[in-house]
Image 1 (cartoon, rainbow, N blue to C red):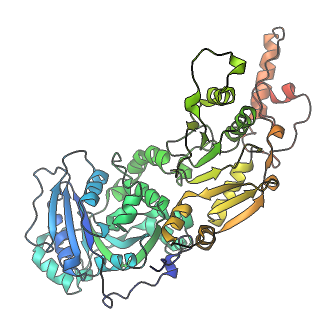
Image 2 (image 1 turned 90 degrees about the vertical axis):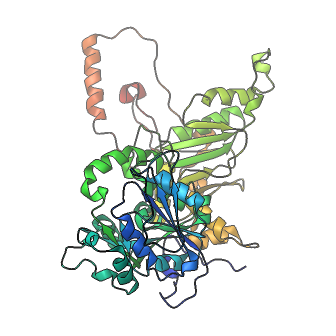
Image 3 (image 1 turned 180 degrees about the horizontal axis):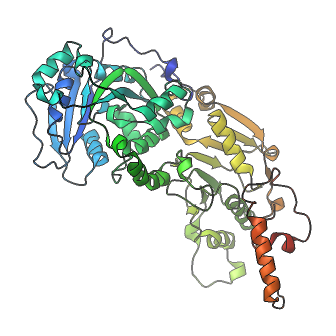
Length: 524
């Protein structure tokens, strides 16, 4: 079987889709329509879908009734192969879409909201991308309109007009409002071709599609989300290797303004804590310092070695300028026991010391086997515990990857070993592309880009040379309160402008350390 075409970064322009009306589809498509009390618009949604150019025998429509009251019923005008299922457990669009995905018979899942009206070629436009690659995530174009006049027309008439290619004429004489914030970003990024890893942020599920295989390989919808589920799904699909396509020939009318347009500030206020916690690419929603999140930006994986070096490497990682990380340490933690033993002669002493050092540290995970994958945006895999990063090293390397949209940085050690800092979505893309006999490294270079640095040239030093500062609390007599207050105010005045890192974070601090830094300052 021939290898799929390679898309570099998110530049889907390298793919050549079929011309609408001039090709022979083979994949079956299930249009998943979640609905909750959309009885007034659903007949027109199904009327538009009944007029599609996509072959009827390859098109299924699955209406998922999310406990509407009264219960949703199927209208008379609908596609030939239309089913209705009812949500029995859970609620919300994400839950309904996921249940629809599991129940779908199609090779392709096409999400379509219950207040959308498709042009004749809408499904065909989506489906052609999935015939090219199994990792495409196309999104369509839409305009928002007032549906009042449409709701006075018989759905059968709407079906016939859509089938005749007249969908664009259904709303004459009224304003057609674009999805402005999406259109603005498309314009800045050549319809997402230059957006790289940020393309996932603009996954809008009301007109999105994906192969069922890619959906099942991803984490799918987070069924606990009540809003923002499309953006989270975009992250999940990117992590599975997806490339996000803008198809302006996949056209639809949105019947009424969306909730996001009507109540943008309130919706964003609700979404922000959820999306910040779950989607690492939404870094502007995350604090630069002081917080960890459910899904980390970076995961570091290392095999436990000698206790002193292992503890020092992990401490160095936690001491750096990337607090939004998780450190996964692989070791035989099950061997740590409570049996009577001379403590310093314990056969598992090295393991015990590492275990005790981090068992209560929330950013460290102790596991028996190395994980097969990661939910983090980036994964750094260390070959051993001989080198440790200086405080600014991780942030600088990650910024290097972000600027270039590359897939990996290889850090070579003098010993011949190497650490690898890899973009999770790039690894997933390579996994989808690789055929028997392919070189994964060559594919990673072709699809994303790889660059190698000597580790010691980009902020890594022998572990014994990495200083991790501890508190300085020497024994001394009590200080005069007025003198102590002067020290307090001096420290506050000095610290007010010291939030940004110095140009050279490895430069030594001059003068008396305790006097210059105070008790809580950082020496680098």
